[in-house]
Length: 302
Image 1 (cartoon, rainbow, N blue to C red):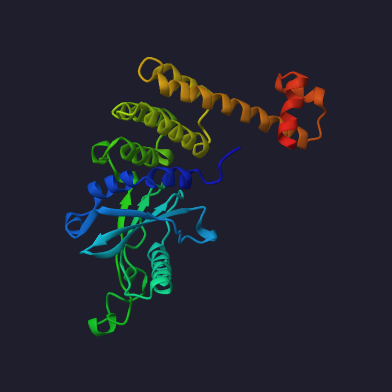
Image 2: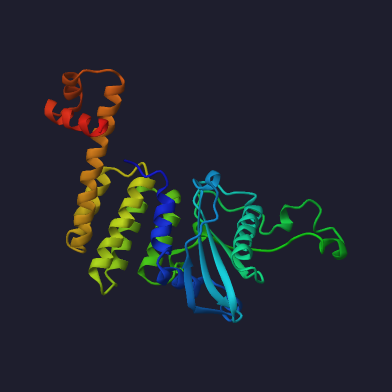
């Protein structure tokens, strides 16, 4: 069965690891911000501030971290739609207000600093306004004494579509997630296969081979569910190339290829059932035996 929101799942499975989030911040936060942040204090927070309406296009993760020696937060907003949101600054402000509301209700103390980050990997170039003021008609032309009455802030934007291979930095898991997120919408099938093989090379840098294999499986599951054009033929080509260089990865792809074959058969049988076709005719059309078709039908109905 296809995962409804594979981008969200892959993002949270990767950035949910403190070491990956910390690696990202170490490599991509501006130096002037790094100078006032103590990344050794970073801790993930369980609360989510995305409402149901926006869950399909966004993921969010909140991390607590000391900022200027006070309790603060870094808020990751990951946009995984194939187009960008022009009202992102307004949406971010809503989420920040939710965080502050939670803090006030729970602790009734001063509001913490929140640094918002947007990681974007859509197929279109990001062209949303970079600040809340950019959305307010006539803001720039207002005299300063009037601007003071209007909320204003900025967010850090990371548009992965613009990153070259050389600009993608960090340890293996971070480089992989950023590369694949960059390529999933913007690269051809052949280019994506190159990126998968490159990911396998990165994972061989890990001392813990078991961790590398588990993450490669997570990666391949994401690609399979997020990329409709990824086929069994593509999987077989990757298997052939990995057999001699990364045998563990080859086994992962082989297993997932079997899952893909099974799901394709299930889809064909499901469509045939919906057309009201009989068991024998379904078997003839799919090339399966009647017992295989019956087994698939039982799985679908149960």
